[in-house]
Length: 235
Image 1 (cartoon, rainbow, N blue to C red):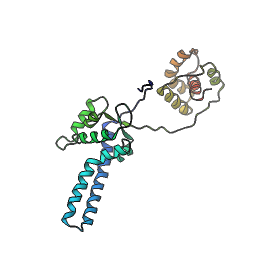
Image 2: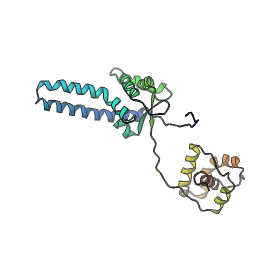
Image 3: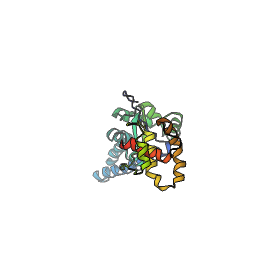
Image 4: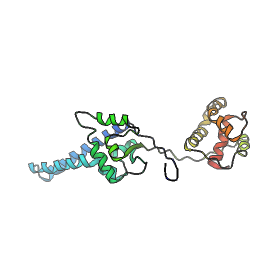
């Protein structure tokens, strides 16, 4: 909740999706390490002196890959981006560079070989926001970015819809859940028969009738379409 009392909801990234993103990053990290070692040995003409720079590159990549990517790319590594994940602070705002470094340093404990990620998994299951040890230390969480396609608004040219729209308030305050339910229903209603529309729309239409003083006999399908028009089109 912001100081203006605006509430934002974030779907949390669960352990399975996050583990898949981790494996993608691990494969990419392995390729970078192999590439850095090859370049080091090539520049040293295959001499033993090329091992030193290769080890330095391995150390920097293994410890700095996650912190660098999350700090520079607004909470995303290539693996997280591929799986639609992003690291944000517990307040839902972008993380800082210090948070990126801290969550990755402490998070290295999660995957220690003797425990095989059991520490991180246990922490995620016990915390309320699927936070592993690094997230708890840095005050961060991992969310799923849901980008819904931008679609045009629909106009339903039915006299009964127009009649109910005229009886509704000029402005209707609709939360994100109600707005999404109305939009999804109106876009898909043409796929179903009239009887099935009524059955699907009735649970949502019932409280809307009571809220706006509509008769119980008004068809649920028509009620939802009318409220949709008022919320999204203002007409």
